[in-house]
Length: 119
Image (cartoon, rainbow, N blue to C red):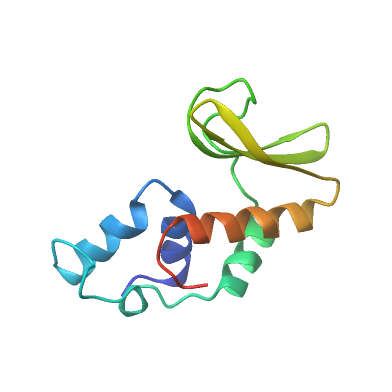
């Protein structure tokens, strides 16, 4: 079992990393008959604590002009901004003046997008 920091980094990594890691750790081809709880033992609160203590890297494409689909987040002028892009449509835009609230929101989104159901 990986230490909690490694688990958190995997959960925040996005793009199927949690799935791939779980399959590899359990030695299976898919997670159909397995539980992520057998691999990930961190809580959502621990992920928040980690982010508040260690910071949060911006998503790969930090511009609203990026055409890449998915969840985007970035910091600009001391404000955090988030949005989803799908089929060139931007939705669920949010801006945060409070960095702590922004990071909690972003962490929660990333955990849910990891698809583990551990929230």
